[in-house]
Image 1 (cartoon, rainbow, N blue to C red):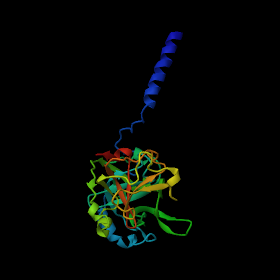
Image 2 (cartoon, helix red, strand yellow; image 1 turned 120 degrees about the vertical axis):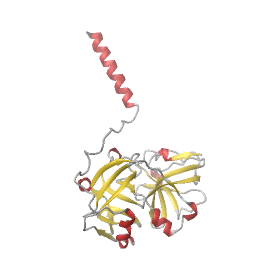
Image 3 (tube, rainbow, N blue to C red; image 1 turned 180 degrees about the vertical axis):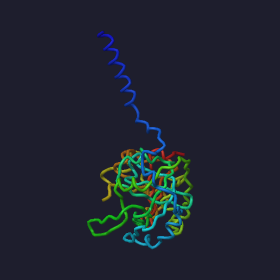
Image 4 (cartoon, rainbow, N blue to C red; image 1 turned 60 degrees about the horizontal axis):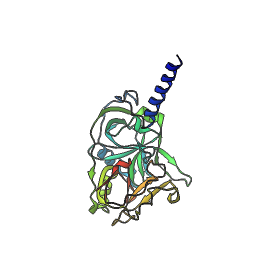
Length: 279
């Protein structure tokens, strides 16, 4: 009997050890346990139409508008917090444009995987910008008395979206020749894109993506790319990202991410380390 108990304990330890060697898989789900199944397609508009309808809400950081009529957008999730670099946000696209949705919730990747299409009821939510980046959420006022659209409570978000099907996603190529073109910035900010054939400025095999010593007030670090001024484009990484302490690659790479804007500067938000592909 003692031998049987011993073998059972050994087997349990082996199974536990094998599970701990890798991350837990995201359980297969149709998503119906999340969100609000009562959200209906009664007045669906495109993201481009949303931006056009509320264009005045995007003029400055402190302009925003509460949406007071029932309307919906449908979009596919292109970015989430899978490796901790996109914080309390998801990016969605619908073919006409893209927008950031701000949600005060961690672990969003567990329910809002890249490729998941969602239907979002906009009534009573706010649309505006932070640094001219279009965002959906609720107002936040900082210590300086400045207000802008930021993270909505998780319970509010759960009332405002419905899970739809899973679809394929693919980035478009970022046009480096248009890096300063204001129309190109306005049209494509928030999109999943790839910038090809670039090198990190100052990469030496030791310099990391986002060490604590280099962080700004938002706990992030901006890294420039060779040949492109940091006034125009940076790779922005949170010090909490899983890959924050990894050294910047020295080789030529292709970088995929959510290309957001802060005023007229592109900020590439890498979703996960594998978004960087060495040439």
